[in-house]
Image: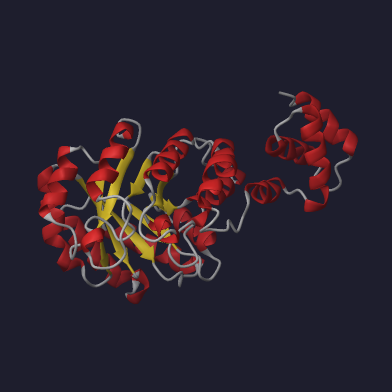
Length: 331
């Protein structure tokens, strides 16, 4: 199983300021769980206490985000990001009282010592303490591994390598994961940004190097130019015969019908679902009008039709072939 940690409701909320509304939060949690994604980070974009940081305000308080997500705690591991400079004891205690799935402590690479007290406080409260080393590239893999050892010794249950500026190349992502995996016994994750257009490639390299989890976000929504798009990464995994535990079609349907309409004023999806399916299927966009017409005529699912027909003929599918598959796929 390929573990995905979806950050849409935390890092992705940067597209609207610092946090999503109640409606969007609930829609996205439902969409992720329905699609088989069971680790979800939500809340203020800067983490717990972000509303008191003197910067951007989220529309809901930390307590409200926890309260509205609580009904889903039995279906997914839902948690929040936090930073030592803003997280308060009262917030940790409230999270523990409500059985929040985790608190992920984020610190810049080189500053792991500043996280020790907060990690201990989280562990003592009974909440799982995940950790993230932001701007990981400012240290060598070996130096970052020393930081990870400090976090593990402090009680961290996992550590994530964060490529915060989208600086890494695939070979970098793989190297950092390899070195950290050999240095600590806790799970190692990878969080990529897409500034060089390599987020998915870096995530794939990290996974191949043994990363235990990959951070991602629906449509890549996140600060700057975005994270690894959840649906694109699942599509790549499924092309490789992996990640079949995730329901890609459900997620794409949710993006088309529920999520995109809610965020379209703030965000343009760089890889619309139909284009993702064309890439996954190996189908030239020239044939898309024929697929649309056949799907509409027969009442067939367009995305499944493209995948089915392309499995038979990627080069030049005929209208007759498309119609024959559409008839089989008729609802």
